[in-house]
Length: 97
Image 1 (cartoon, rainbow, N blue to C red):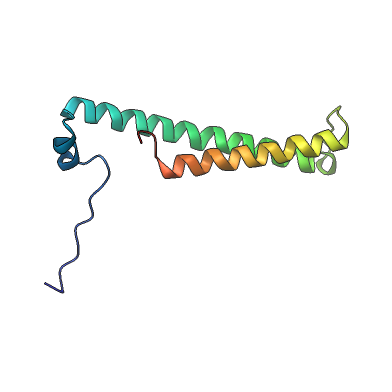
Image 2: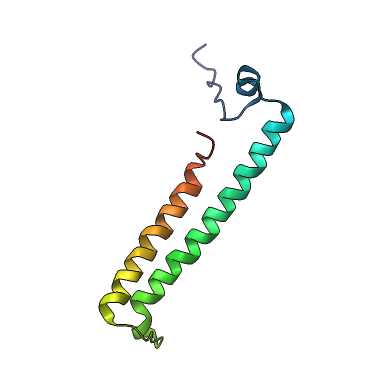
């Protein structure tokens, strides 16, 4: 009917597992691994991103690093990119494709 809300199937549901031949134990293990990797990606991505920010604004807040400014900016940019990528990968949760 038009009033009914459509059912949204989540990835890794039991119906998908039955079609793919995955047991409940394997499905639970995949879910646990996915959760662990998501937490790891969010945590490490945030830490690396914050390191990039500190490297960029370090001299303004009194944190001096003993490397040249050009290399500090390059390293900060790489940290920001990689940290952003880790957070993005954690939000996508696309680990088993």
